[in-house]
Image 1 (cartoon, helix red, strand yellow):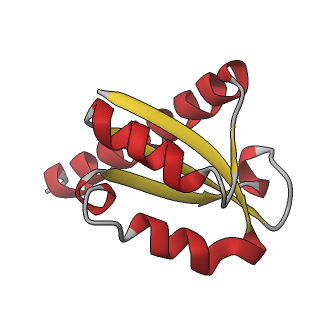
Image 2: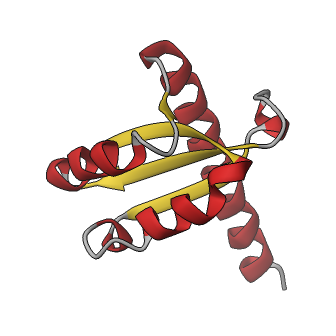
Length: 100
């Protein structure tokens, strides 16, 4: 699965929401997180979009005017944090449903 990560200033949140509602992008996995808790700048959000390669290319085109695509090394580190968060949440839900 292809993916891309962008940093978007809080001042462009309305524009970001419009981009994420694009017909093709809305059918992909989208995660939007405040950057500060992840070690990023305040008043910025990180946007992770995962999905089909053509949808990721479209996301990169549409997000470019709104935010900044993260450099490969930074993106890889953040991608891992997003995935770790997802796995932790899944593990927690598993415990929730299996406690008796």
